[in-house]
Length: 292
Image (cartoon, rainbow, N blue to C red; front, top):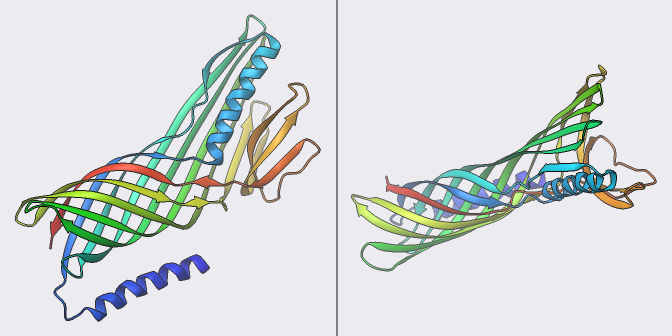
């Protein structure tokens, strides 16, 4: 509720500025851009790296061969549209909405011929819809070129979907299991960008800009479903939790996620807390601005 009030207050502040400057010459423009960035996955990437380490340690301990690896989520294509309001020759405000997605599907295979064959697949996808409220400063470089610096608050709507399948064959016996889940969260953060705009003609500009966003979300709630060849089916509701567990056989500590209504606990579990994942991003975008 506090986050929503903060967004409403910021919108009200923007509208108040518009009302106060009602006598000034106000100009409107639409801005659209697309690009590619790097998203910082937080706990999710830590768990993916830990899972890969677990399978590597298991292969070394049992004399198995390992192929493939679980890769971290990083690349994030996306786009944004915004309404910009020039309050003067130098300053203005704007509101925009964007979309960004990062997805990674990877697998690891373990084998000990002819006794054992195992294949594990992980598919994860993060989607974010950032709603940005901005103030910006314009500085003309030449008749055609303009530097624009902007920053402000961002309200992020995030979703995380994931699936993990395990296909194992022990001599003549096989077993398959699959876990699928989805969770969502939302929260406030900050954003900023620096762009170079080039005037083409007739109120049309093309631009390139570097942008950044900081937003960490740690209250992911969702649903998870598990099924296997033993005809076991479970449906779980709750929050995503991060925890670390000590493996007695490997004599090592690994990290994992669990969806549960309660905080995980146990003799070998430590550092359990709500899953903290980042929707922070740095990106490079190109686009078009049209005065209306």
